[in-house]
Image (cartoon, rainbow, N blue to C red; front, side):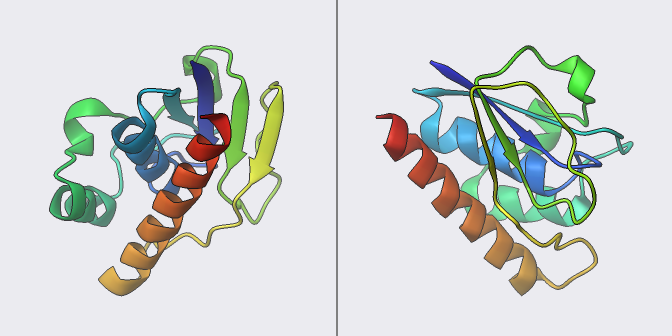
Length: 129
């Protein structure tokens, strides 16, 4: 099983969505983590609400904001598109998904980002199967 870390600066929205969807869609081949260089006291409220609504996943029950130092060594690092210097984490494979942060935007923007993450996780998992 490959260990994958989804990384963004605050570990409160996109990377948390990716961790949840990775576990949900590809938990048979991916051991998923998310982390950042900073943390937030809680996961983005809109992300929590929409993930529960769309997939029945309650991220507040299974996840929390973590620093890079809080996760084990990983094989794959996926950065979300930090628009700043993305955090570095050693790995065998690295890719950047270049996703805009939907924080503060409407539900349609959030859903668009969630669906993009779903598609990219499926693609990543299929490449490992």
